[in-house]
Image (cartoon, rainbow, N blue to C red; front, side):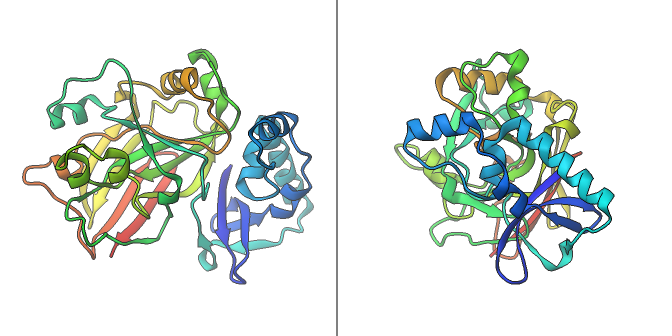
Length: 309
């Protein structure tokens, strides 16, 4: 399934399933009626936060049983022949998970990218935080901050977690995945490299610096997350072309590694790294400027597009 969060023409926010080319089934009311998952209730109670009452968080907190129930609901609605659908052309997409609990980015996770930065491949994942307020949507115009002159792009496969995951083995790691989306790990390189001390998290967490979308493709549609192609175009020119099989640390390895040290929660996002070709490491560098248009594609997942203003 392709799941999306979107704004309708009346301004309301909905969760939908793409059921046909350009047609969305709104499942928001169905989600509100879904029973609260016991695991979500236990974790939320311990954390002192309420269980999600609606939206994509409600679905993700339900885990694999909720995804299976949703698939059955969609089939039932299709068989009924009485679908009330929203036209994709007339809605505004939001990020699939508009406000993740956390975004964990992995630095230099492709050997070719490590090579172009002049750094030997890491022996363990380099973990970086992107703050949740940096999320932006497919089609959004991202404002380049006035103090940033080295705005860079990084096309990435993003993993959306769909279960509470702690001390998970690599063999079971992919069972923790709700689905996949495309993310642009925008970075202000001067704050990452040109200041002392380095401000890597800050450099990657300005408003809008995590465009994500256009939808979330559920895990069952991606047999192997290490068999996907990644391509980035800037103003129509190919800048990055890579393959997830070239990751130094696979999706399963990353989930297992991270879950040893932190609990991964439904809706958390892992940005799994970028292949070679981002602007700051080209000769000469090619930083983003107002008016630039970006297209980032992960095969079998989707195409994320946005502009810079």
